[in-house]
Image 1 (cartoon, rainbow, N blue to C red):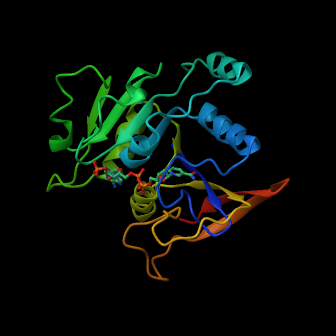
Image 2 (cartoon, protein in one colour; image 1 turned 60 degrees about the horizontal axis):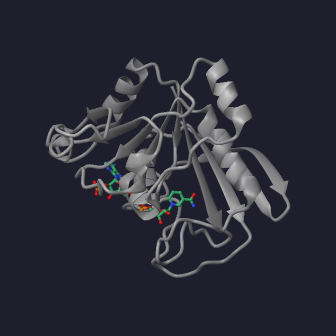
Length: 223
Ligand SMILES: NC(=O)c1ccc[n+]([C@@H]2O[C@H](COP(=O)([O-])OP(=O)(O)OC[C@H]3O[C@@H](n4cnc5c(N)ncnc54)[C@H](OP(=O)(O)O)[C@@H]3O)[C@@H](O)[C@H]2O)c1
């Protein structure tokens, strides 16, 4: 299984503004890049905070990308897996009307309110022994059992921190955009408790593309 985290950030390293509104700072080229990465995926994993802030998820819309998925015997849209320990997700979000397969990755407590509803076609419980956290090693096994080979990870910063800490990320695509957001409250690509220099995930730069004012950085996470 291969996992790829895809993020865009400002030149000062922010992935959203202080109000956490959905990012609008990247170009049409970056939107197309994001769509291409989503189209390559067997499933998308996204934190409930990102869903909550945007209300909906990015769909594959370009006909050639949809056709390419169908040619590969994939559904037109990859399943969207929302990750939440608590399961506290607003059922009125536009996300629940989008034409996609919705899955929830959660704990036993987080699953409680969703078993009776048909909002999610799958509720996957993968929890640590105390039931408080997601057990990412078990997630890896479950996703592999479901024949999901390429997982696209779309953040946000809290989920990315957990995934880096669990050594769950293989590749990172980072688009650096020519704008400054500033502010200490604006999220950066990876939040959480932070790493020490020794435990910090190290990256190998695979490729850099410069397209107009943006840099498309492709990293591999060293294992
Ligand atoms: N520029 C970009 O490329 C980009 C990409 C994505 C997001 N964003 C922005 O980033 C902001 C959201 O980031 P964020 O860090 O606040 O939120 P986030 O990581 O998307 O979501 C946080 C929530 O996800 C769940 N979660 C996170 N880690 C988890 C784990 N290890 N296990 C289980 N559940 C976990 C938790 O839900 P529970 O509390 O229910 O446990 C947590 O409250 C938004 O403003 C969004 O627009 C930007």
